[in-house]
Length: 89
Image (cartoon, rainbow, N blue to C red; front, top):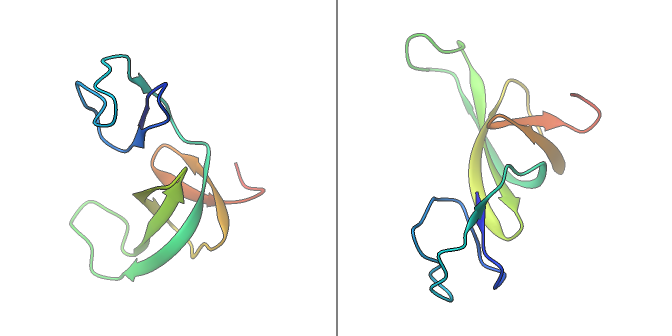
């Protein structure tokens, strides 16, 4: 994710802030988010787990997609693109 001193937060790298035009964008890894929706995938691409969950989570007003090996809801911890239940780490 990226942030700018003007308060803009986004999920994709950019050369310029779309709000103020600044080039001073900082990358950061979100630590937690709130689950908006989850979907269980039972048919997955070869080489991945047999089933897992896609998680749509909101982080500072921006929605991002994560994965999880178990159903999650509410506030979650984010580590390496995965959503973990609170208290797990």
